[in-house]
Length: 285
Image (cartoon, rainbow, N blue to C red):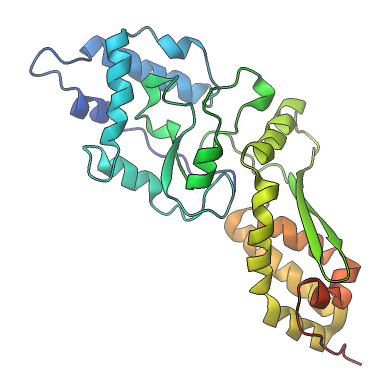
């Protein structure tokens, strides 16, 4: 969750040339304008994709901006830039915004309707699930504390900020995810991460995923409790958590969930059986 490997932008000029060739003369984008766009791409990367109001006009003509906006149609499965689409989606199995959604779309980190010049720029195209893409605000935010984290350009791996709170009832369990303000994290970054949870409605969407995920752990939990009691369950949760952390990072929702469950004496002592609707198991003597 949160970060993806940064794609190469070595072909950025080739993409512009393919859609707006210099020869024959009369292209809607002149050579000078394409050079300006490449300069904007560099500015974007240096700024880690944080919005700049100057980029809306970008020193380009209205016709050039309209052409760039329309150029995104080439980033389709059958368009001239279909290879760009395929490359960006390659090996991305889960949405970086929610951590579980199937990749269906390419989200414009900076909305293309407002920042036309970045409509086909690889660093501005983030593979995402349709729900997260739909929840994304349609207008760019001016408040820095409400701007989204860039999946390619802002490395969050130095912080373990995602945690879960678990409340176990007689026959139910509630899980709520939250952002922890850890040492070294700025107030602005903390606010942006909290905003992320809100914008993508994650605490409304995670419960269904939690139920599916934990239902898949039934056999392991039963076996661990039958032969090791609470310590066996806790050991299983910790081993599973570390495996997920190695693959998906320490801010994956599953890692946060298992960390919370492992710290729950009630869950490990057998309450998982009723809370998750499992059949009762006799505790080992």
